[in-house]
Amino acid sequence: MPVFRDADALRATLAALEPDSGNARSSDGVEIIVSATDEDRDPLAGLRAARPDIIWIEAPRGRARQMNAGAAVARGSWLVFLHADTRLPAGWDRAVESAERSGAIAGCFRFALDSRHPFARVIEVGVRWRVAAFGLPYGDQAIFVRRDVFESMGGYADIPIMEDVDLVRRLRVTGRLVPASYRAVTSARRWERDGWLRVTARHLRLILLYFAGVSPERLK
Image (cartoon, rainbow, N blue to C red; front, side, top):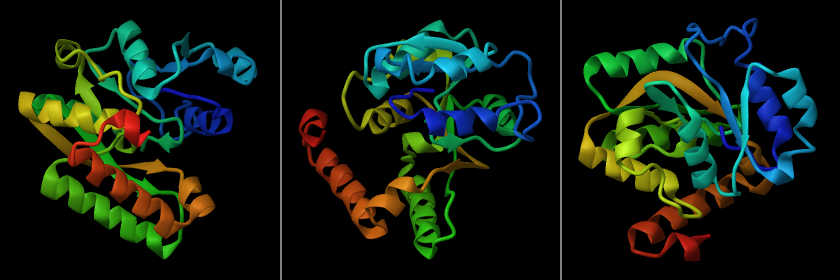
């Protein structure tokens, strides 16, 4: 779980993984690794003290760098990359187990937003269509991947944006990626703060420019 100046969102996400939350890990073999930056040291001090069951590391700022750093210390055979403002569903580990049994090398969860706004449902339908038509989930769908495959590919590319799209494109060449029916719920705060149409249009513009060949550095 990469985090940067987002202690409140991280606290809520971690609370959803506590044993009494209903979304608890069903296996003692699961590690939770939070990859923060040195700027998060003080804001996360209380949370780190309250959650000694979590592996806390620091890495250079950048989602790709932070997720690679977390993957480097993980010991499990599968890696789940979870954004700080996305909550995993109850039984999430069964989705990973199902992917493993099917021979897939990676997978993702179903995208959902924690808002009752009608536009949230429109966005969710659009994401389902994108995944079904193009096999292109984003990072806020909690992408999971076999660790040996992830390592053999060199992990996330060290780019400032679109690291999730780049990884998925490489994974599709390597093997099969399966979408799970379990919903991972992402905070709708960006849409609520900046406007539903504006944020959606910005996302569409960025992905179109990326596929047109504009560099991630310029997009950032």
